Length: 171
Image (cartoon, rainbow, N blue to C red; front, side, top):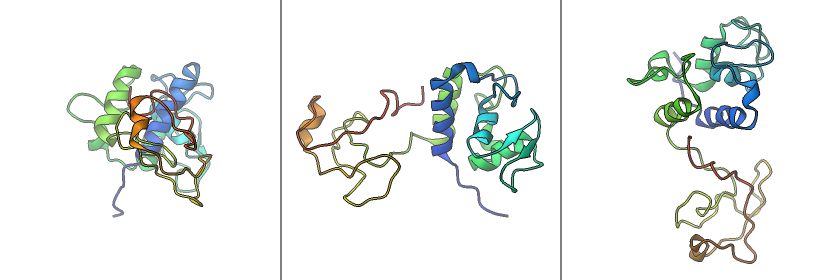
């Protein structure tokens, strides 16, 4: 059996999708075509297309699976991991706050992204994740910053990325 590796990046992308487009989120349906629950969005963001209960198109390893099982697979978690003591990640009764709490509990803190400095994450660690020539989404290579950035101002010559204000939290 292949060891599952929790996909925190995908879990937080689902929360970002829900925050950016709440009208496309309906926790009480796997995927109705216009809206989807947390599991449905995990599958959609992984390339899967479903007919509410089953993945009908997309990556071969997901096609034919139930949305629930496909979500476990792409999120890299087991049924037991998705159901900690205080709630099931895919529960139809979960509100956005519940999802944020469960994602943080199951997956840990939001992964650091290329170019994100400590200042955006609310720490005084002002080193950058991205070095010159580093490949990475839309992040620019960033020169090393100084500890003064934590004081609440950006230094000349430091390029700060466009991370949303809530990027360091699950809620």
